[in-house]
Image (cartoon, rainbow, N blue to C red; front, side):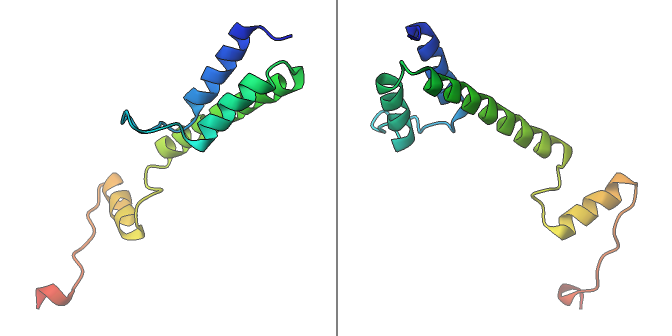
Length: 105
């Protein structure tokens, strides 16, 4: 039989790894939060379910860390190509020449 403190710790760890909920007081729990709460209250005594929950927590933490590192070391990932080229040129001390366009006539 699992200890209630261990189950509470696992449940809270899972909630921490999920995306934040809206802060409005009228907002109810999302279906995912409801399902987690229900599974922890019903199947909590099964050691297999606890092991799976621990593995899921480790996976979610690794995914969050991967996303953080990806954003940190690839800052131009979400930029359009033109902006990325301009910033790359600035990084090595160059400014791109102005393009001859419709607005310059």
